[in-house]
Amino acid sequence: MSVTTYDSTFSYRQDQVARLGDRGARPEMTAEDRRRFQESPFMQKMREIDEKAWQQFSKRDQQRAKLDPNFNPKDTDFEAPKAHKYDKTINYYKTLGVDEYATNAEIKKAYRKLSLNYHPDKLSGKTQEEKDEAAAIFMEIKNAYKTLADDPTRRQYDFERDRDDVSAQSHGKKRQEASSFDAREALQRMLQKAKENKKLPSEVISVPVYCRLEKFVFGGQKTIKRTRLVRDRMYGGYNDEVKIFRIDLPAGAEQPWAAEFRRQGDQHEEREADTIRFMFASKTHPKLDRDGQNLKLRDAVALGAGLRYEPYISVSVPVLAGRQVVIWGRNPFYLSEASAEDAELQLHLRGLGVGSSGVLTLRLKLNLGGKPTASLAGRHGSSASQPAGKKQFLERLGLGPPGGFRENADVVQGDVGVRGQAVLAQRRLREANVTQQVEVDLKPLGEPVGLFTKPPCSMTFLASSGATAIFAVGVDCPSCGKKKGEPEWDRLKARLAPLVQQTAFLLLWQTRSVRPKSLLRKPVFYDRIALPRDSRPVPWKGIGDDAFKQGHYWMACAAYARRLAELHVRVSKVRLADDEDDEDEEEEAEDEEVMDLGQTRGPDLVPEAAKVLSNRAACLSKL
Image (cartoon, rainbow, N blue to C red):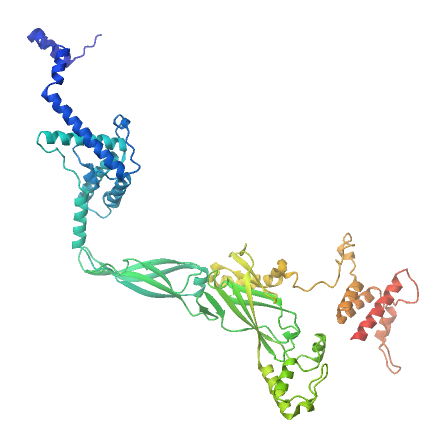
């Protein structure tokens, strides 16, 4: 089977040969013909046009090099492939609205600016006709950017347009140029349209919003419903619309805190829609007063009575929903010689206010009890002589004794006279009515420690930097700061606060030097650790000896009594002849095992019992 194909060009040539013979064949051009053709006026005109076009193109490159330092022309640019198959009759510079000597950065900026208005993704709310028109314009903008953004393609495009310009001028004509999108005209039309439709600027409407203080401390979201007027585009007029605003209030926000929504309020005919500005402020708290970022507990916390003789203080203070503060430390009024019965301890806890820069101020009220006894003054080694301040006061008023005050001697009331006694009495009365005050500043110790509780919370440790050793632990639970979380916070606080108060301060190494030291100089079971727990004896005698040396005689008596009970030593009471004991007591005395101290039952047993009895007698004599 054979296949025959038809070639129209071959058939045309065959027909031409059949009709015209060899006359249809073109003779080859000789060297003389080429010379005459190159010297012809047409070719001279073409060479002249090319020369002028190249000179104009060279000037263009020089001007671009002056304006754009990154411009680097190369001879190989005319051999590089084109980034876009451009149309030289279209002025792409006019399409982007830039100058012919614009830099690449200016071209890119113009393209992005036009894309914001004509990109298909930016045409929501437009009609289909407007979308189709914008799509055609965006295609022209995109082609112009492809041509001008690539330097080799742009140089080829510029040279061809310069050659057409020179050729048209040589023939006395205008350069042929196709109609295209003009960015400058479009921008002017947009400005004119915006000027015609221009409205007055919108007004700012301030709306006060009050929320709980816990939301400023822990942060949270606030949902606000507000009715606004919206223009009815179909029937005209205005309708009511409910607008929901959801605002995230950051933790530690200052007061007032503003959240602004531009043109989200009522719409108007002659001006832009109103701008809503919500001004947040905290409500009045039942316990706290706010001053900027600082918080202050309104009422003082009472710690109890008779604290003059308590070396340590401990209290748990509920500050607000989601925050509990536990305080422990040395009592600054311990063994105070002041005659005042009330004292106040003011604590400034940094970082527990509103935000990390806020300060929480607590006032602790201590009832010291009655006036200090004479034994208390002797324990501090104070002399019975008049203080220096009272001496100077009496001498300045001429109320002192005739011979002056003597060192280490008591002042007799008769020496100062009746007027001096009245002045001293008034001064003692003023001192008794003045409340002692001590202020302590506590700073955080590192970062908060997270706790795996439900709901999760964190602990912040604080310590004082001065001579008064006071520590605090702040327990925070942000999720319990809401109204719905208060029952959950009450359950968590009831379980966690006592545990923190008993154990949290044992974890801090800063409290080891503040806590009371053990009476023993060494561990109790250091040499009996291998014995079972039930078989490990307690060294009551060693405990009593250390307590005796430190002056704790009652504690020493108790320790010696426990040791005597272990040795089965009963100390008989002194009885009178006319006393009658019950029969039950006599039977119990007969049944009880009594040790004979005079009998030797081992090398150390009797001597230890004798020492314990002797030491116990010494304690009783001290008491």
